[in-house]
Amino acid sequence: MFIDATALTKVSHQKSNGLQSIIEMSSSFQDFVGMNKTCKFLVNNTTNPASIYDPEKQDGHLFIEISEWFLKGYSVGYITGMLCHEVGAHYMADKGISARDSTRFGRRVIANVEKAWYGEKNVVAQKSKVRDSATNWWLVPAKAKQPDHIFASCYGFARYEFYRTLMIEFASIIAADLEQGPQYTVFTDEDLKDLVDCWLMDISSILATSDSRPWGVPYAKYVAEAYAKHLALLKQDAATLTGNATIQQTIAGMGDKTTVQVLGDYGSMSKKLFGY
Ligand SMILES: [Zn+2]
Image (cartoon, rainbow, N blue to C red; front, side):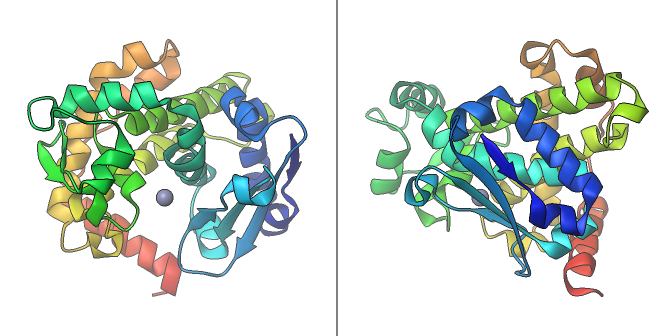
């Protein structure tokens, strides 16, 4: 894989170096992009924090677009979380989830409700609802702007597992870097927490708003509720997800968020975005 991070480096050397070490060290990222392909970062000025092009339409090359306000306003840990969403909830997950896994996880969650369920495509085609077993909320992926986002946010679903596993893999890279000593890394302990927080805020906002995330502010109470439920399950599953003590301690040390804290997060995002 060839990495072209020229556009990132122009904005921030530190953040560019951080993202490059993540993708250089991630074996699943390497497998996804492939030996002779390029992973190119682009920087734009849109309100959307980041987006990714369908690699199949780009001859297998991966183009990741990040907006400048997001790159400037957030820590490298948080930006790693965004990268994790772009690949782990979307195209890398499409490639990584086999049809069998998709069916298996789906059956486990909604067995008594939908007897014949053949994975995400059918759920969308039939406009079926799915349950996030962490919050016990029901959602209709077909109604979401991006149905993928719903599957990536419902506990136990194949796409959720894939996204969370990749988040832990990225966390392991940061943790390994930190263990080398501060002089060898661009990351700090805070970045590890930010990565986990980014993942939790992402899925909680998707669940609370059925993927209408600009509406997160009036739904802050539900974002806080989903955050607490998914954090509790992450704590419960941490020992099976990773043997790394630094990551386990980071997760164990994370607390729930109040509605006011969630509102604060949204508030600081609009400040970074619109400058007020
Ligand atoms: Zn997305």
